Image 1 (cartoon, rainbow, N blue to C red):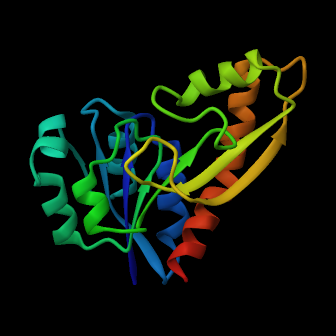
Image 2: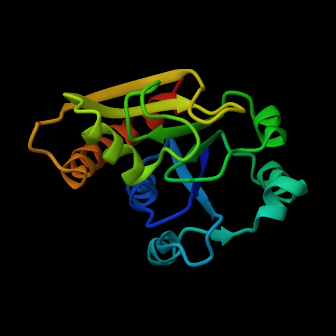
Length: 188
């Protein structure tokens, strides 16, 4: 049985989608969710879904090996960033090479980098008058949104679309494709 650990910072809709996807499968399960936000809605979702969830602070994540040691003890086969906003520390990336992935709400390399998340991305897509956007699932490296691309899915952006319209289209792509791609990576 493969083991997945999810990192999330906010509402946790992608985390919940992944947890539910793997709940009735015999190849993998989400064993833990970790968040840098003690008030994140993802904690409530995990409680309802009976999945272990913990919050941590910046010191535990970047200045010590606390989170690395926690991950070493759980030995995940894959670490999935699902709306996690902090840059991932090199000590974890080195210990788990090619085992940390992220979903980004745009077609990288466009609209990536520090500060490009959520509505910031969707606003930029609309302001740039893009005719398409999408999601990118990629490996995480030491730079924001620069890891090798695993998968992309596209959607049209209409001239009349607002950033909120784009956000809804992106959310649909994430719900549809993210669990499947995670499953494929676990079955490699």
